[in-house]
Image 1: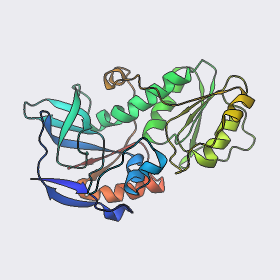
Image 2: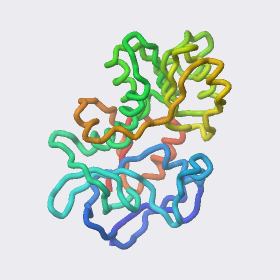
Image 3: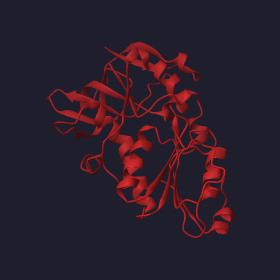
Image 4: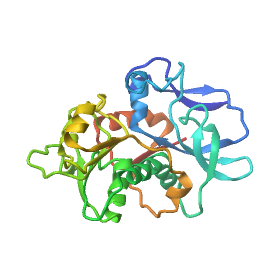
Length: 278
């Protein structure tokens, strides 16, 4: 038997409970040493996953959340990857495991797995040029902090929008920008779209943390002459690990503190990558 954090009904963080469940069975069974925590998991826990992401099948209850772990196989390999049956547990079966290089900590590996591949794919899609003005929403988060690094490497002027600092979200009078990395949606996303420089602006959309999708029509895009695109699936963890990025490492929680971590994610009081340890 192993321990797992599960929920039997949709709701607030209090629905997450540590329970004893049978060990999973599979070829790449690992003893989990670290679990990545992501804002999107709070959306699924509240039961809004299918509403916001119609292509997402949603969990069958009871369910275990989470989509990334680092762990050790029976053969002693230290790997990271996407678990088949959820990550919030002491054991997991990892699909398509990737070896974690020596010198890369569990925390660093998880900061570069899903959030790293998201940031690098978004930066590729944006085609950042030297001198571009780049607006990064949620710039203090795991993806945002990596996007700031990537944009600066490309020679851009970076505007960091965050509830924890930077330029915040009051953009009245802000000069136009060439690129927006859009992850909030709702009114924030709409105002970011209007900041795009007519004729050349590019917006990469990879989330809507506000709970409201970006409300932009084909007519809006035609009026401004800009590009709005989703996230391409053209980046591997191995590629990200080779870029020498320096992820911002956030707080570390115990397995029985994951509900507390969800509260912090929803309150926007976090910075960098959050993880939990069994």
